[in-house]
Image 1 (cartoon, rainbow, N blue to C red):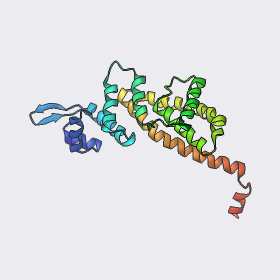
Image 2: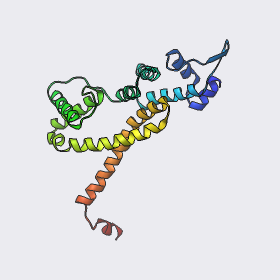
Image 3: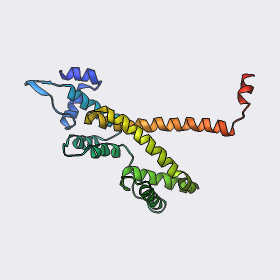
Image 4: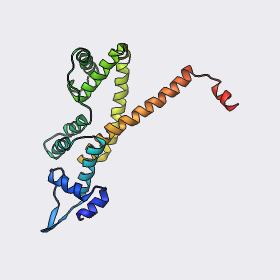
Length: 217
């Protein structure tokens, strides 16, 4: 297909496609004449992945380049490729003295206790440490002590479901796109479901059992 058709199929402007080619994110098309190039479905898949990494994952062009380099490395295990994508869509936090450093110890202990194959200095571990430090700062340190393992068990269940979905995507590019989209939008879905469940649980625990009768009347 010509670049115009690739643009129509993906919704990405011709100028942007050319920019991605110049930046090394998208392979150039196959030259069919000095001024014409042909593109195929592989270019379309790669272009959709680039847009997912940029628009959904919020990565920089440099970050996208790193993920694509991992994806295109045949020696890189799939686990490492997916990790490279996931790590770059989780906010990174700078080291902070005091509360955050203490919270990092809790995160390290959680990883050890759960037997997780996770680096305790990964972006996700950093994010958890910052969240735990914030809970401590507002007087809810017992949250981690009482609920952290229950949250971890729930996260393990969700992770298994997530990876079951990702595993059905087939090609490596489809897997990477699923991880990026699933990490960002999956967090939004899970957060919304959690809030809805809170409303239901609160209504059942604290609500007026006759409230519906009053409203109907």
